[in-house]
Length: 344
Image (cartoon, rainbow, N blue to C red):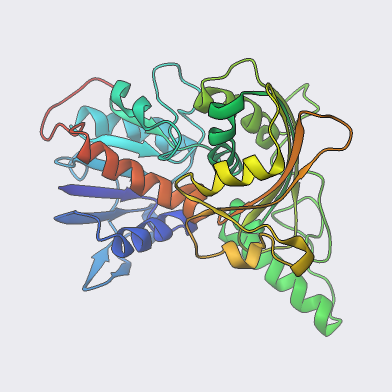
């Protein structure tokens, strides 16, 4: 199996390569693609180095799978070309997620959706990803009517430049130096909380990150009637997104029953003994693939509402790990058609 990783030098792309090594991904050849300025760089891939290549009609031929994390513009242009050349694309950008004929898939939640792919499979937004993993067992058991979500999203979700901005601003705070002007975020992020993650589309009071939580969750869970109210914030944390989620269920569900449901679901670790300081932390989720859930408690204002605290590494399960899992599922389900050209 030949695998292309497009955007291999970025935060998610490099994490994809690391996850592939960790999981002993069954690739006979892995080829790294990135922008022109990175062409010729070498990337450590365990027992061998990968030399970064440029995208071209010739260079994209002969792949079985292409894992994309290069932004929606690149995905919009090159994903169909990879499909035409015979590959199945797993795309991490927002470009294809809400297309009717493109499945939006989380490995533990809706793997059956892969069966209807026509060459492109979409990876959801990182905040959506961790939330639906925690919601799926609840939905199946008692149904869900409404969600009220507040996210606390780490800077790595915005990219490497955002990580560097937090680092430089934090150093200036500690050393009492002149604060560098913000370049990535609209305001200083160090020592601050921004009530904005993402951008505001025209004529909208909600950011695109908030709208993704609404629309992507409904599509993945195949539950278009779930009400979702979302507020997405950016916090001075390097890795892992945290979420406070209020879940209104259709049928009653006790906190004890909820803990049992979640503990038995693949990809979830329950950490819920708050009196002893046991609950999900961003620093504990970093570097892990499980979604961590805790602070499971009854909402005293509503008999069918529970509050959950959900944390996950946004670069791993929120992006790279799920993409690799989907590629593994495509292979194991016989959905790769080597050498067969298909229309996008």
